[in-house]
Length: 150
Length: 291
Image 1: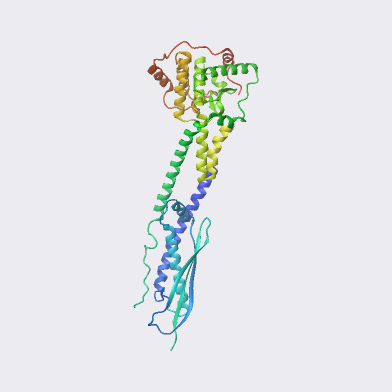
Image 2: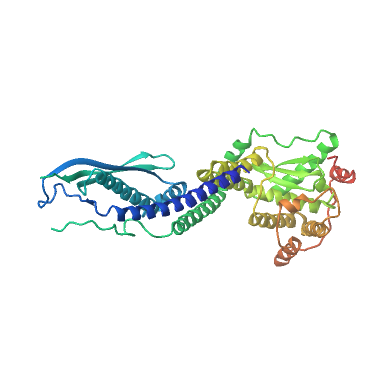
């Protein structure tokens, strides 16, 4: 009886994790793609210095941070995956969303301060909980440039 | 240099594969691996446990409560006769070093007998009322002693504990359940469950011993015929159910198997039956037990 309850509870968590995780992921991707189109005119690059052709600039730091958590289903599948190795497919899409979201927040910040060009963009990530259901922070930061009036 | 940002490429950094597909493969594989491990470990433990010297089993059960002897004089006499019969039959088998068969007599109506750890064989009083001759009783006794000789109780204990340990890796609760069930039976020296191969092995050994002791296997055929008749006539409302049939499941007809065994070896199927020893006969005549 106890084992049956344990199994039922586990399956419930698994189903909730899967259902909710799937819906949220689909919505998040839709939102990311829409905002990527909206912010397409804010350019972001990884090079350390602005292109030579740009005018004298006013520069400041912009950053976007995202904290995401895995769900019960993804974590369970990842646990099984650890036995045999291979791609953590669930985590791959989770982290891809986090990186794209972080970049979008960075661009949003740049646009609000009148910039359409961010250079030296870097990404960093830190696991913030490692326990049963891990979560991670992704930071994107870079140097936003605004052309100075002549 | 022309600088532009393009929409991120989809499906490269993240996979479009349906998550349930991966889940099905991984979970199915893990489950199959678990089942294979449980089967392998239980077969391994069942094979290994009887190979351990009997003295370890004896030490394990030394302090467990054995079946207490009957309190009345007649019961004690009957038990002594049972023990003498068991000793005679056991002398015809190869027992593990240091094992002495100890018979217990339980004053209960159910028709049952079982063998368990530490060389203990227990006969229920309800079984006696079903037996007409010493030959039939000897068949039951020889069957149970054969379980002991082949270390089947040790195999059952080893299997149960090994399965429990493997399952406890997955779920503490289910592991405790599996190991606890068999430890509970072993800890009270109650009946352990044997598998069909072990029952068949014990049946063959019992036939050999009964044939050697009595010169024919009439007692075994009597016993199995009587039990099969009772099984067919289920629902006769008798309070004395034949528990022995439930704890010793075999799908094929055992009487038929006994006849074939005898025919293949030129052993007579019929012969003069020996009457039950006096105290056992008196107990049988006194009718079923109180409980």
